[in-house]
Amino acid sequence: FHTVAYLQQIWWFEVDGVVKFPLPADIYTLSFRLHLGRFSKRLGRRVSSFEHTHGWDIKPVTFELSTSDGQLASCEHYLDDTEQDYDNGNHKRGCWIDYKVGEFIVNDSEPVTEVRFSVKQIDCTHSKGGLCVDSVFIIPTDLKERKRKGMLK
Image (cartoon, rainbow, N blue to C red):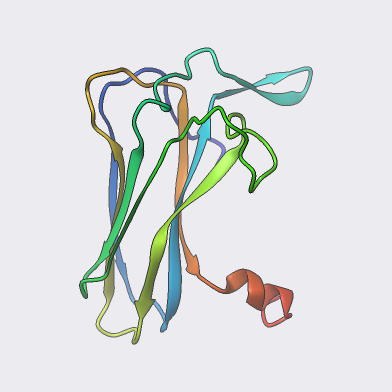
């Protein structure tokens, strides 16, 4: 998106959502797309500022999803670990990271599937800041594999 939510300083962080629509039968993955640091342009290039980035290494953020037919998934991540992010070969700061919450199965498009999702860090013992929240993705789990095999254009 051209505009994202930027949290400069907060004590309580919670994003909740719900979608309800007929998904085709498949296995789906739900992910949040987050970024530590604030974007700006310098000499025509996009750069990140970490001036207000703090507090995300103290307690983990909790990600959750639930479906109308009782499927549940949850996980926790520290958004700002200063150690190397070995999966991506870089630090998490300054990069858009897709945090996978979990998978759910849709057996039939009827009845309509309701998916509830959230990300939160509500420990008010410390302030947090410097986080961009872009979006939530619900995509078929094997979409990349299908695209690679040429099943999707």
